[in-house]
Amino acid sequence: MQNNISKPAKGKIVWLTGLSGAGKTTLARGLEEQLKEYGISCMLLDGDLLRKGINSDLGYTREDRKENVRRIAEIARLFSNAGQIAIVAAITPYQDDRDMVREMLHDCPLLEVFVACPLEECEKRDVKGLYKKAREKKLPNFTGITDIFESPANPDLILQTDKEEYEHCLQQLCFATIPQVHQNIYTQPSVVNK
Image 1 (cartoon, one colour):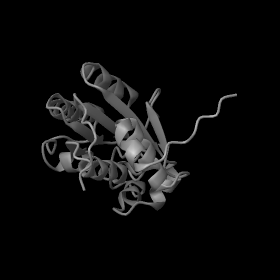
Image 2 (tube, one colour):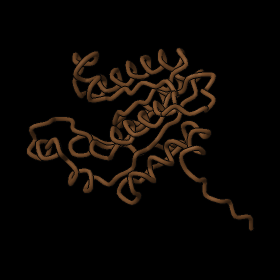
Image 3 (cartoon, helix red, strand yellow):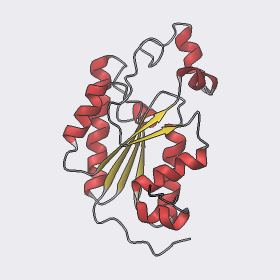
């Protein structure tokens, strides 16, 4: 179903950051589906898939993580410059790396989204068994267990996936990404003046 919605004149980058299991990829896929339904060109850059491909030569040291993020940012820029919306789902655990992304992409519209979820809840959702392996010391430098995750200092949007339903989080993400798409899918909450 294609609707008559004006497409963005310039591309954009939507960067979802958060712990493994927080819901980044699920929300990124939902956003991708919504945008494609409305004929808006987009590309999902999943950190896990990129780790198996273009970034397969990198480990999980601080330097390798920085290079992983840098490469993802460069790829996202290519899609944005081509007029597409690049949707990035990558843990991006360090504030200085997120700052590097903002600096690198200063000429691209960037929406930083913190997919916030407590570690305990992420461990309950652990379908891949990664947290269990990290707790057993089988995965070194695992974010949240043997390596840190620094919550973003000033994200553009915070989605609390442990407190809000998926549909509500997706609604907020769609509106923040392309407001005119959101207005056609959902009803905006009314604003109350005091």
